[in-house]
Image (cartoon, rainbow, N blue to C red):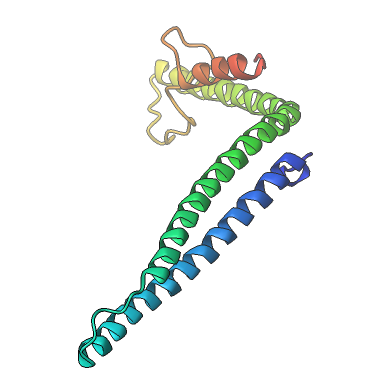
Length: 178
């Protein structure tokens, strides 16, 4: 059975997303470092300028670099979001194919579940019938603790049951009839 890693579209989309994330992390680190330099230089240079009687020292070049990095971070952030969306689409498409391939396996197991439910419902019905037979003869069945799996669920019930609902759902979704 195929896995997500078997699909080239998924692998390529994962690689692209990972590259965008890595690039974004690098830019953010660079931006943080430059931001700290700008803050430090502004304070240091302003303090020294003030002490020497000069006017404020210009740090516009660093501020411009910081602004450019902010723009690059925003672009990489958007690219990372788009890459993640593309990966999600690739995974969804591959998942449809994988699930289509697995559908017969699910059907086989659902047939087993339905057969087991039929046996449980039949056995429950027989347990109930035995108890009713004893009680109709005046036998007190209190020494026979309740042992039906579910008293409410019957294979066929004019008022419906969870087993009937499940059977209808399996038939509708998988085409498996009970």
